[in-house]
Image (cartoon, rainbow, N blue to C red; front, top):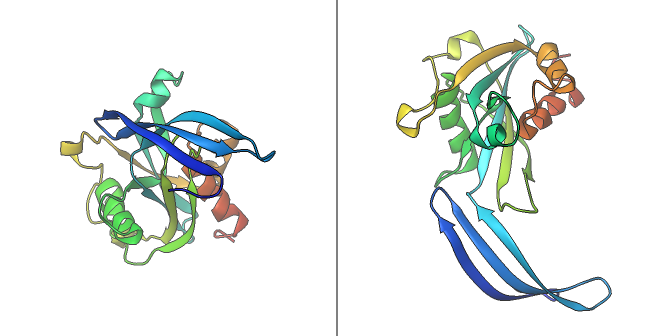
Amino acid sequence: MEDHRIIMHQEEILSDNWSVLKKYTYAYRNRAGDWETQQREVYDRGDGAAILLYNTNQNTVILTRQFRIPTYVNGNESGMMIEVCAGMLDEDEPEVCIKKETEEETGYHIENVEKVFEAYMSPGAATEILHFFVAAYTADMKISAGGGKPREQEDIEVLEINFEEAYTMIQTGIITDAKTIMLLQYAKINKLFE
């Protein structure tokens, strides 16, 4: 992991519990050409995938609501977040992962998904790249209640919401999850509901 601006000196594992937290010590050549020694902690939880399920006939989207402890400890009084369906890739390809997560979390069996982009979600602290998808859904694709996997301590509420109502939730601060905002804005910009 070396290039003309980085010389890696040390990599130290600080935690290997839920995911891996490492501290890196390295030399960085800045724009002025001077070398600086820097240390940064980097969280590696793996890459993930997220999907916006949409129904143009009903003008609805499928979102989820679940408790997120990091938001709770950072001031979200209930800790509940409204989000698009998402999950970690683990060993799967992004498309395989998102189809599996969609069924587990929402109860919808989706055959056709469209990858629309990918993005680093917090490049100053985490290695994670998130793969973003959209897919059309209909009522007959619902094969279970969803809700996630109890053995993974998932307790996910499935929400079917009018698209404009969901989009307004960004402005009102009800939806504050970045991946959800990005996919709702993608739907708006690309006129999925027109």
